[in-house]
Amino acid sequence: MTDLPASKVDLKTVLSTPARADHSEGMSYLQSVPRRIVTLYLPLTIIVVVLLFPFYWMALTSVKPDEQLLDLDKYNPFWTWNPTFKHFHKLLFESYYPHWLWNTMYVAVCATVLSIIASVLAAYAIVRLRYKGANLVGGLIFLAYLVPPSILFIPLATVVFQYGLFDSPMALILTYPTILIPFSTWLLMGYFKTIPFELEECALIDGASRWQILIKIVLPLAIPGLISAFIFCFTLCWNEFIYALTFLQSTSNKTVPVAIVNEFVDGDIYRWGSLMAGALAGSLPLVILYAFFVEHYVSAMTGAVKE
Amino acid sequence: MADVVIASQAKPQFREASAWDQLKHNRNWLGFWFMLPAMAFLIFFLAYPLGLGIWLSFTDTRIGRVGQFIGTENYEWLWDDAIFWLSVFNTLLYTFVASALKFAIGLYLALLLNENMPFKAMLRAMVLIPFIVPTVLSALAFWWIFDSQFSIISWSLKHLGLISQNINFLGDTTWARICVIFANIWRGVPFVAITLLAGLQTVSPSLYEAATLDGATRWQNFRYITYPLLTPIIAVVMTFSVLFTFTDFQLIWAMTRGGPVNATHLMATLSYQRAIIAGQLGEGAAISSAMIPFLLAAIMVSWFGLQRRKWQQGENND
Image (cartoon, rainbow over all chains, first blue to last red; front, side, top):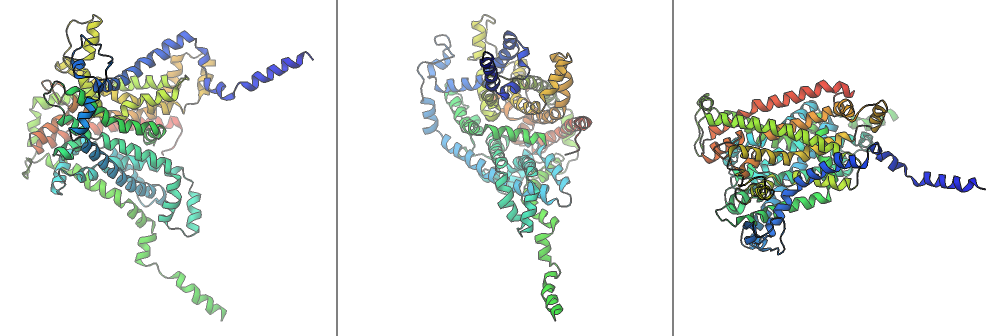
């Protein structure tokens, strides 16, 4: 009778300790709490604060009234008690900012869609059709990824000029895929390799063409990869600077990064508020997108590197 | 009779494949059709400009004027150009210091994030934000943080009593170099950390447990387990990091435009200035073509580093 409760408790503790916790804790029990604070939490906090401070500063500057921005003695610069949306108002209603935002979005979406279509076809052909020389082409595409835009922009400028694309969004829509296709092809090749080819063999026996297989079998299974490629390409387009700086001239055609650097940097001593508001508004769409698809970002980044 | 029926029915199925069938079903032709869009983009807007760039560097092309072939005159001109050599020095310094620190801090951060702690997922997500935000926009934030009069860093240091006057961050040559390198590290660390973290997560914890039982210290755990297993991914990540740092343009352009007195001019910014702003396309193309040997060297080093380590992983070439 007496040993029954004891055994009960024993059983309970065993059951209530999840196996998962036991595994994930790993060997951290070997470290004492103070030691963990010094070796883990302290450096981590410092790094994270340094990484995020510029964004805090950007956001704070964009809502500070002008007089507080430049008077560091009277007001504490790290906080403001009377935020203003004046800078955003100026941005949205007294400048081309909505135009620029629209241009950036338009170019990014078009270039991304074009690149994804081309990359899906190319990646499928390299991984599954295995035509003669497929491996060589795969290697060449990887090499293309290593060619940086800053050695291409001068000759591309002459090409763009010859084709009559100068100062039009088409110039960017057609040149951005050279950055995006190599990356997304490699990413998608990795995804396509994980799809069992037995599925395709079945479809082939049932008389499906390669095109039908790609559309009806491979693509639905590769949707996570497609999302990763899409988001990452979109981010790269939004971030691109040197082509947009070189190929676009008129103020209303510019993309956000170029426009902010060129149009907002004037002699005005009070420019900082609207400059930071512009930078913040230009980053927010990407940060929001990122917040929803963190996992896809990480898999896109690591996927392309692992191959 | 029956034989004849079978033969007449079977015959059309074994007809010769027409040229059209060849194009539709032959593996190689199919591959060609599938590759066509990607190849068209890469040939017209990447391979052709790459060749054209090298050709332009041997001409005296200017904006709005077709150039003549002038041999290696552009390169000879650059050879005697002190600003060009300064930009080469700056680029090498920038690449070397920033990449080394990015690697060190990134690896450290990856090791920290690999530990078990509360809010792990959220921390990882936050760490990656500098990588997501467009470089130019965060560079503008740094421009404001490093402002000569209203810098928050100068303000804080003054109130801590460490300095008596504002630091002229972007106006002084040494400080300007430190600032752009810092901004580059800030932007690059998340990429290095998150990719290395993905590599760290594939290392089996039982290896550490076994080593600890055998009396290995934390440093030995890192040196003899983590580091060797991570080497392949380190090689790839650092290749990318070096490549993108070496050809960096936007960060510099947004923060200093190469100033003060060319102290932060990289080869990419110098080629933009010469080619687009001054209009000397040929000379600019020569500067950017001069980057190619450096890039090839960087790729080679990491490639052979990767090959040498592959047998340790026990995987065949994939």
